[in-house]
View (cartoon, helix red, strand yellow):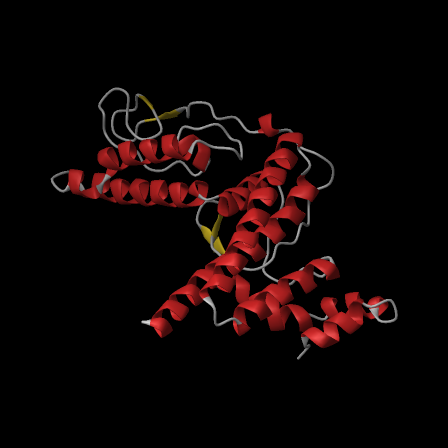
Length: 271
């Protein structure tokens, strides 16, 4: 197990050449960083949950944000054969099955961009659930009940994914061909890993609510900066930079979640 002292030695001029080897073997990441990913959740290919640090396999160069259309879905109603919209038939108004070619931005009727109006997103989500909730179809056919459950679950998944910057960034990169997989980030900057390690060490050692709060303010500032840089990178189509920023966002997001848990523990000790 690698200690903070050992990592500092590896990052020193005489030991830095060994740092990448150590990191690529996963020793450092398994000790400090992988626990940060235990609670990370995001959607891949609409229904797959993923954990871990991300690795880009297939993306080279840039891709335009306008590469994916948010146009109306064209298909026929399963019941009457007329033209059907995304959720209901425009003729007989019967609920339709989910369209596996439709993305989460289409489902929530918003632009495919990283900077979203979350209040509008929530409003759209509530409107859809009022129409699609299974309770509204208790007296309908078994097929309509089935489609209602599937559509409602899909809307829930879309909202959970797009609501938060981290999962939204994961999803947008996946749509643009950045394939994500579980594993360690062997290319991570050793200095950045040291920073994360020190923050985790500080959280583990602190017994003061003021110290926990100070760490929280620092982490939130870092997340704010990373979010702004992520938005800029995606707008430019710089997917490789966005992928690197995404990994850092995940580290700091999970540190913040850990900090909130430690804050509760500290408060409990005082009470």
